[in-house]
Image 1 (tube, chains in turn blue, green):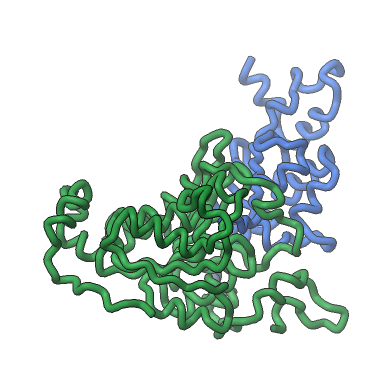
Image 2 (tube, protein in one colour):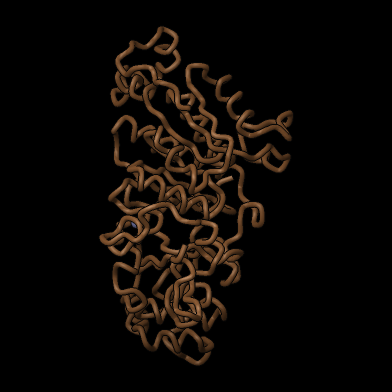
Length: 126
Length: 288
Ligand SMILES: [Zn+2]
């Protein structure tokens, strides 16, 4: 059963499937909790995703991931990128433990099981 | 003025041997390491949430000269987290309060007070007398200033930051990346709240401050694997610790291959103006 589920969670169908009610028979009940990428956010960006620290999302690249999250949580992309879609220089995006600026930026490919973290600069000390 | 340190070679007194015995007994420290600690000079920026526990643990460990840069006075709202200050200190200068507590804990250490904000005008001179700088600042302008001044002075910077239930810590060694490599531009004013605006868990100041003090200790003794090129992230709610890679950015304006920041700049302007291109094409953040 697990094998069958994996076959149907190929990226591509997955995003669309996840947005349909389970009742339509799409993907053996694929839901948000089977999305392949773990997303971590801290304090300030947390506000843009209903206060969650960690959630699942889908996307083949950082750009797709941000777009997909923004569809679920309008305004999310605006916390990560500027008007022109460029990544803000005071928010770091990590694929696992590597800053995506040293990988492929927004075009960095993501695979199942990866963790993407969005970390804005913190200044508190007092 | 930084006082002349006791020489590295002077023997430890019987009181010192007993006081530091739990350190000295460890092979990584020993009497020689304890003398290194005594000869060390560390500047702590701020005597509040982070600076307090850092200065306290450095003093307890016998770090011989502890500089503290602090101009604020103790406020009732500080006492939820700032371990060096007590109820009777409300309204007193934090520097005076901190110095008293540190000396009461360990009369062997020298506390050098810098009762003014660190600025572009005084930072290089202030830092020059120390081996290591510890950041406990509470705003972006000071963080960029301390980063630049430490790098330009060739000093190691032990950095930490806190907000809400989050903590971060890392160590910047000149040539191994800096705060500008990690965050090239500050956020526009108001976008990232301060602890005063958003709140901070009191105990996380102790958590991050202890980590900073530990990294200073390791730097002085030359032991272990320092938190260089790694950013430690602490989430107090899940109590998960993660580390992210920190790299030296070849395009960093300070420590990159072709630096444009070669002296201290106007950091209020740098952090006060949104890092955007102005209508006339100049960079708002880079012109000062
Ligand atoms: Zn740098």
